[in-house]
Image (cartoon, rainbow, N blue to C red; front, side):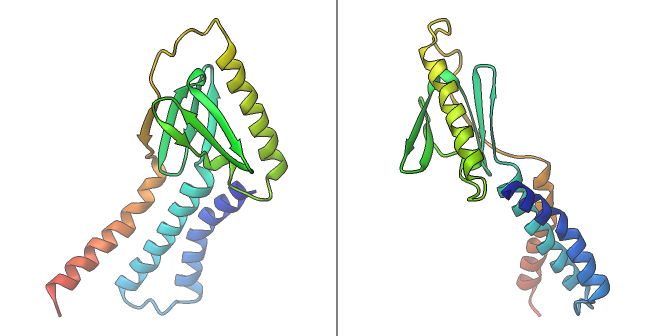
Length: 172
């Protein structure tokens, strides 16, 4: 449900911007006002994509990959312990510590589906930890900064910020 709302929010930003500039005429007579509106729409779309659409958890073979909004984690299933207490859920990655996947805690409306996904994921981790054929982990768990095409939406707000800083520093 949150995925749908976030995707709709991201797609709605250009439509809202066009409506404000063309239909409502948003009193954006100056180019700086138009750029400010476009920057705000771009920043909102980036936020919707980053928080609602991009988080995921995937198991590919013996490897689990957790993508939170800003950081990505990758570890072998044998290095992962499933922790759940009082409705809270986390993964303990060997050598990394606790990781809380956003994908399992995103929406109150997805309660049943999230619970069944947690149960299935916990079973996969338990199977990997007791399988004698797997042997020791080949790689250590890794953490990396998550960057992607959606980050291009930050270029306009950053350019607008730099423009305003130079404008303020140059004085009246």
